[in-house]
Image (cartoon, rainbow, N blue to C red; front, side, top):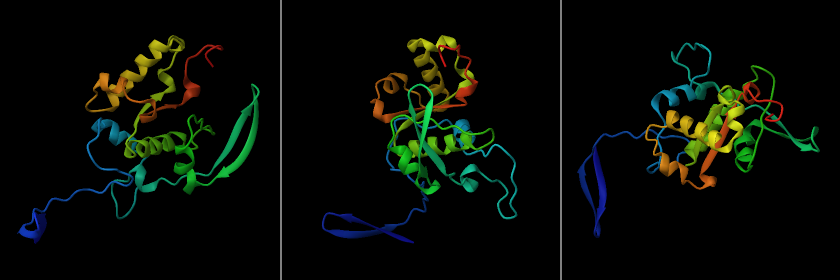
Length: 193
């Protein structure tokens, strides 16, 4: 195989290096500020259960995930929910990507964690820096903003391979995404909830 490249005013031929670059959907290419930790990246693509397929021995979440339909709602007053439009699965990334704050809730085993994993990967592939926190890690002490920021930084350092904390702390808020999974597991008092 021969490769061509442009030099000054003409194309030149040369030996071809057989270097395959994996295409990653949604990736903008280029160097990232922060790379995902290998173990965390594997967890993000783990479906959370064992599935088998006759032609693919190792199924990943990205192989089997189907976006669910969601129902949009707004909160009026302190506890009144006003339901809005249906968000079809194919429109979820576009619809949620334009929102500043989102709360997803559903029954147990409805796929909220799987959806969180897929959203995390989508945000990451768009050049943002998402950080995923489990509600199990949140306690009354985290009502103090400084302690909550410490929790975010600890999770950031576990999820990324090159955790340059000062660089992360100085990122524009529009470049970071905070995600909390299983918020109902948070050990908060009545005031905190």
